[in-house]
Image 1 (spheres, rainbow, N blue to C red):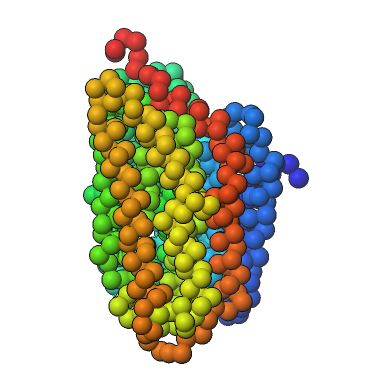
Image 2 (spheres, one colour):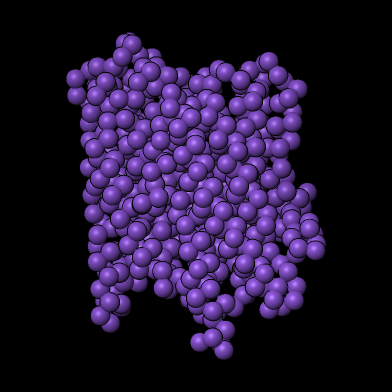
Length: 511
């Protein structure tokens, strides 16, 4: 089997699995088992592609490009590069763990739920793999439908409010991005005479600074909502709180990365001159997200909201690394995306597991779980320390590289009299301290202290739950202790991103 065919299988396996589930209607165990089987095969294929990926070759690998709407210049174009490689692997890795980890939490419309999960997996994977802007936009929008259903049907008491808010925020940004996409392609056609939505063609487009600024504002708004960055973050806590456990895991583990990936793959490289204009504002918002998200997490009493606000803080580091334009910072941003996906997935699974036993998310209702459910408590501490960024965990690797890159880029600017980048880099370090503060406060109340919890005695983790959390914990330590493979495979793509954003593409007659 060729690698290109394997990549297409990785993309379309969830669709085939969703069709198969229709034959298993009524048999909940068979539906769950089939979903796990399909996603496990997808992960095995994605792992093989990761191994086959040649870190010494720049550009796309395993690419497929077939004309789709030829008159518009639209193609079905997918491929792997160092930008999307780790995110594709992360998406495939979390797929079976999401279903296994929440095996018993969904007992209503089981078939429909797992079909929705599989279709969401297809849309997310396709958005990462797409190399055509039309295809990317279609899949970007398609993700809304299954996530809307997952929260709206299987969510909590305020699920209707959360889903409407989620859709309104993301749809508003998407409409502006659509307008920008249309104008961008039209401009390319006017200049070259041939319409094209291919990323490779769009990245060569030369546009005046004022046009770049307007288009980047539209793209950046859409991507910033998805990250989310402060002040566009308010949909996220509601969505997390009301979503069922699998929905929260997918949302934190993969879906939020769409925003940071969009900035890295499209927003900043497409409009490099406008990026330099926007960088102080975007970098300021990234640092505000780091600190403000951490402060909000510090005062929450709902355990899901603590993790939700921590996501805003952690993804602020990703944006800081991407905007630093330093190689270490860019690679750190990619590692941080993967690390946050693993750590947040583990924390939301743990919250879901204890919620199944106690049916409350109020932090004040818990205490002394270390004595009641010790295995659960060990895993909770492991994921807490990874979230804090303890050395040897993936959280440390990502945050350290981001901060190193931010300081490396800021110091020469400081010597030239521009102090803002250095001030922002120093301020970002306080997010590490605040992160330790809110997560250790969470652990102190939750795991230690006087023993209390609703519905005692509590049953400790089952073998299935231990297996899922164990796999996640091993992956966190593997990325933290041995990041070399991931860094080598992302190095050339990071350098390409660095070059694209640093090179002016304002037409000579408009300078």
